[in-house]
Length: 529
Image 1 (cartoon, rainbow, N blue to C red):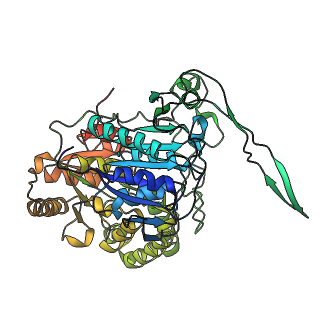
Image 2: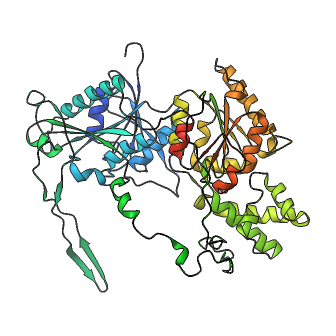
Image 3: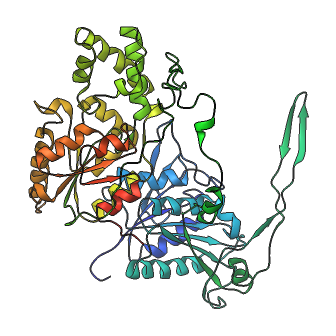
């Protein structure tokens, strides 16, 4: 890779002070721009845990050679998300997690924070490598796994890997001269010597120890365990597809039809929104027991592939559906004394909030807005989340050099709340909020304004934005689709938001998708197969 140094994120679960992390950093520094972001303490066994409800502290630290890194009080997965979602000026091109100061073999990977960090990388469409030193002890030659990792990193940068695939690497305790080489392996079966052991009792409280040190494994040919025993470095490709497809035929034989259950589909059942209880369901079951035919979905790629992709926010990028419904329900009950059906509450979602409330009750619109916002802001951080896979999709679009915009019916202040919680503002080249245009969706003005901003941003970067016919607007509401069609853009409906697929299909979108993976196909990021 002459003339350019790749950007590599280095992390681990043993902590920023681990000699394993420093050993592989020194090896990678010779040819790459390495940023180390790691936990400020040992987080072994953290697996895929994340920090959800408290901010993360990040502290700049100096390594023995004078280079700098970052320590955080988060988990290994937090470290990867920090780097990929905006802490760094540019996301990394590859992630190296390790060197872990013990093996991650067989079933160990399900507990490992080292492997979890690599998994988070591939969830965000960043190639990743996890590397571990088996049977680590004082005096272990960490240059061996560091050299193996360096060789594999160079190969990964040259040849790439299939999407959503990482390499899990383990090195035996041997010198470089005695290392037999690298061997492709499967995951073996670990035998854990764990047992419940009572350590202390105090009245009704008891303290137990359940994890032991006696580890074994099943002796099977071709596994990572066998490679360690034979003096080879094991290289095991892993992916994150947990779905048991072999089980589907059996489950299809089960009786999953709820129509014979008491009360299901009975319109006489009272909607059960329990006032201010945020944990209570708001609406009853569907009002008919007869299943409606599913709206047709289309996950064929758009042709030509869009150069500009603009997204709606609520119900499209962020999962705020229940937050919206509960906020409306709370406002209607508090101000109007009404328990409205869900269909009435979401009827005008997609318009600015003041317009929605005026359509609900003009005389009390301002009071409804105030009460809605009080509830919404109070519950916002607890109930709003990114839809799974959406951050990865946005990162992949950016990697393809697509221009990304956001057009939302939220105010700028409320949009900033969502940005603060999710960190996705760094992924969009332009954002247009409800208080920034005179006319709103379903009028095309907000989309045209976003295209103007994207054009200006592209010109500043020395690039160009295609005309509106190469742009697409992705949304979950009829107003989104109507605005896209009025603007001359391709309208793509997502059926995971507020409105059912049948309602969206009636608007005649160019594509209708039910999963983020289907959306990736439509936007030209993947093909079927």
